[in-house]
Length: 438
Image 1 (cartoon, rainbow, N blue to C red):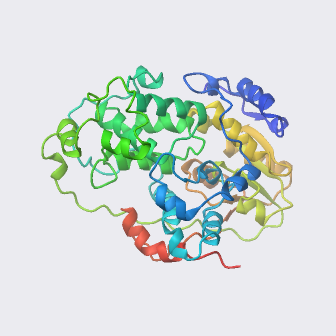
Image 2: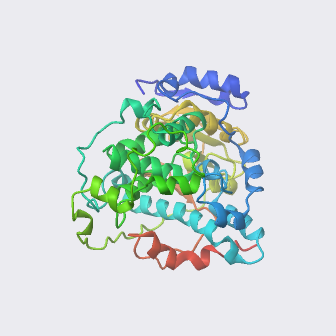
């Protein structure tokens, strides 16, 4: 996002009314509002703990299991707050279990939380390698690959009513139902030939829950580079879970890119026989948690994108310490977060008492601020983010790093292979369905 000063104090933006905050962030990060759908429509949900708890109070695990695949179903929409650590996975699991008579009634909701934990575990194990094909594609495409999204997609004028509405909703709200994300990704990769990485990067710019682990690994699952087969969406599936709302008035009804059976579409998209070629099973070994430094007396609490809240375990462990969030210049350049993402993030940070926000390089800003405050260590919540982990390793050369774990969601001690979610979930599901001990 261009050249920036070494460090810029953004703390005065905390607590501003949304309109004022939007204008201040637009001035500080003009690139965030540049391009299709990168502004801030009024439909964007608010960040912060209060909004998160209101949403959490509305979850219905039984209705979720029955209707979650339908776009109008009883989904939780908690992911933006989970992404930033305003809500923890264990906290949401506990709330779900408290709403049912028997734990098995919350199984489907908890298993979806398990996917998010699984993606983080894979991210921790593979690091930046999630940005490349993890496996050879499960099927060979007939279409020449595109390295960027076509303009008609970015401008929501493909002529397919469903796709254009998905894009417009993404631009307007920063959120899509999981089925809509899968359909959009499948159509882009398999019907239009867009490389999954280009599509994943684009979605990450806009999603309020934009998390490289969940986002990029889900795109690889759709593309067939981290799954046994590519995910194909057809019009029949779309109609079943949207009550046909897109198809009735679609100008290409009967002749769209996803018309036909799964077999028809596989023959249309992939080289014959390529999807049947067996591949050796993938094994991904879990990475051990980071070593924790000896207890400190006066640490600086470093908040990250995974823990941009007072609920960060590092902040909870050291309630009297100064909290610092660094808007990482590398993050701005690599992920190109939209204005709506930045506004949501700053609204989450506004709940953190006494937080300081600085834009710059964490490897410089964090130890400099710690020295100014005479801190004897840095406390940071556990994270799978390679940028944070790399910066922490560099900082640790001069100042101890105290890594603070999140409340336990499940027992991963017996997991030896992260190659597939099914194998992971078989090992951890029992513990994931147990409430956090009092």
